[in-house]
Length: 260
Image (cartoon, rainbow, N blue to C red; front, top):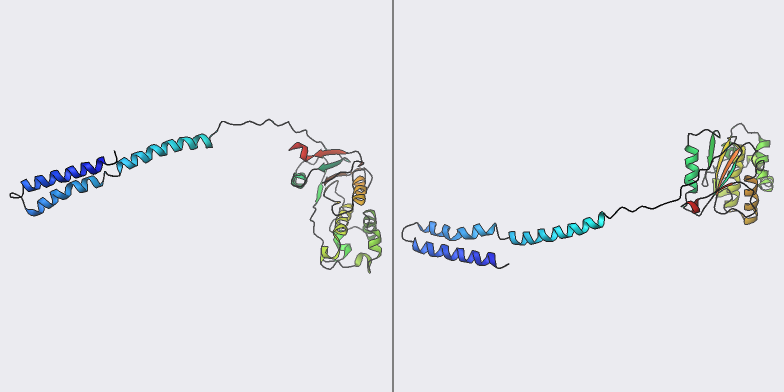
């Protein structure tokens, strides 16, 4: 089949040559030359048509196969309906789950929510900034009118009392370099003290005990999740944490790993 166009072209050229010879005495030489070239030019436009037809047939078959792959039968995945968690003033909620399970995202969504059932809320991020200024100013970020006695009390409650007493200028000591001036655990306690100084009815804490030893972390978590512990009983506290101790205070719990 592939040789058919070539054979047809050869026959046409041969026929044109015979006709040219027969007409040689009655027509101009240029006419004979044009007659010889006419079959070549005519077949030049049609020679690619058989190959194009074959390619089109193959393309249609491939397109049907691709369509079957990209348009499979719709799959349905049944998931259990999530149980809503309702928070009321004074509630304590522990949000647990491994890294990447969405704990921080959930807290940020709660902070942006316009539902004011529990009142205004504040989100204290895991990576909140410590400024290169005094200890006092770093705590006043949460509430500008807090007294020095309130600031000292907050630091003592999060376990930084001895650290504060050892500072050369107490609350007026400058944390040169911000977070670089303290250890990872001290930084986390300072951020927690900042949350204590605030007066928001709803406090959202992201990994407040990270980088603390297991014993201190467990004690702080228990106090955070106990009404009247670190925070007054009428304030709502939501804590996101990787690990919740077995002996943690009874509170509402939301395990994001189990809900995925």
